[in-house]
Image (cartoon, rainbow, N blue to C red):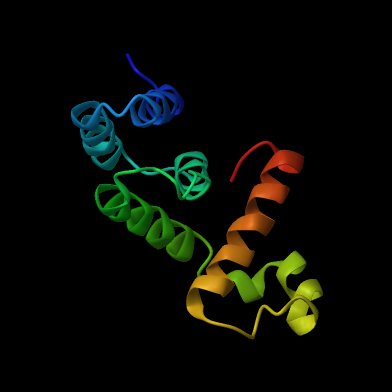
Length: 115
């Protein structure tokens, strides 16, 4: 069975060698998989230079939605309260706030071993 991580690697290789059908197939498979914190964060880490950005948009939208739902009670989490507005959690656009939450979640993932 192909793992989400290997699909992401295949997607990047297919994009590098401009194999559009493979890129789109990988994206379709990733969309069909149940979203996890690891997949969502990995999808958000994909380089913006992927040539099929329009096809990738649906995948990144799903990843953002998952992160937003997963961390919807972010104010109740101790580390979020400690950050407060000092890091701009209350400021900026929704995408900026989501990006900061995803970055913090990814940093915490390394410490705790997962979401």
